[in-house]
Image 1 (cartoon, protein in one colour):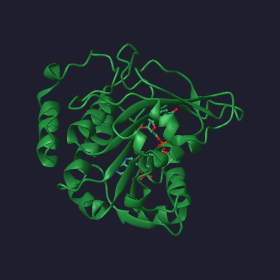
Image 2 (tube, protein in one colour):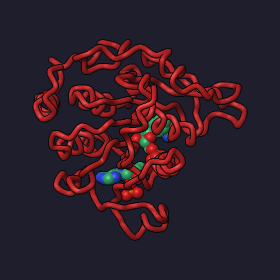
Image 3 (cartoon, protein in one colour):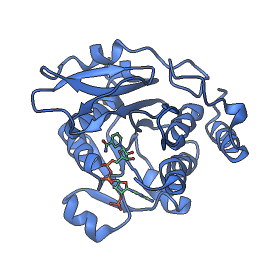
Image 4 (cartoon, rainbow, N blue to C red):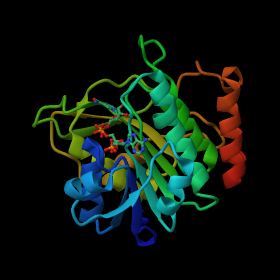
Length: 257
Ligand SMILES: NC(=O)c1ccc[n+]([C@@H]2O[C@H](COP(=O)([O-])OP(=O)(O)OC[C@H]3O[C@@H](n4cnc5c(N)ncnc54)[C@H](OP(=O)(O)O)[C@@H]3O)[C@@H](O)[C@H]2O)c1
């Protein structure tokens, strides 16, 4: 089932990044009208010629209001790549600030997080991306969450997409395939309400996107976790500020989960 008729204007967050630039191109290729949230307009003009640019910083909630105005969908590929505190402020806080800036609007959202997002057994792994996913699920907005594998660790013959759930996937994926999957998820009804890891294996890319997403289980309605996610980060044991953020996004968007 395609939802394309209802999606035209798409905000891309992280649009100047290695995945974001490809997501802008994929959006255009699918006939969508991309709008890029950028911190540095001059730099962005070089990287994204001809694309509508809106200045904003994920750490500055007030700067996001204009960017989210009248968009049908949002693709988030931002990333701080930094220390745990930067991840908290940007990877997580950016999602919180953006959801708050929506002020009740209900665009379709595609969020890129990461393989290993739920792997608390990996030394040095931080829970901020997992927490950012929880905010999106708690918001009640229509979403798809994509957890890509290692960028470009797949060879040129590895184009067959593998979508997995449960957080145990491992492997690489080409950047363009991540971008394409994010944009396709906005346009495909069977991607709605799903969270999955994305890697690639030997073979050709599938053409039946509806069928590909359809093989996946839906996240449980009202749950802040992806279906099959490990139960090792109980909300009740989360820091008070994190629980307050979850309550705030639920209230903003009238979600009951
Ligand atoms: N490397 C891997 O194998 C791998 C695998 C899975 C997931 N990931 C995840 O992928 C993400 C990186 O993706 P990428 O390669 O596309 O990253 P990237 O090239 O570093 O781009 C990051 C994007 O986020 C934007 N950004 C950062 N802070 C911002 C802020 N405060 N406000 C607005 N925008 C901000 C950057 O904008 P500026 O241009 O203004 O800096 C840029 O557009 C990371 O979060 C990483 O955890 C990586």
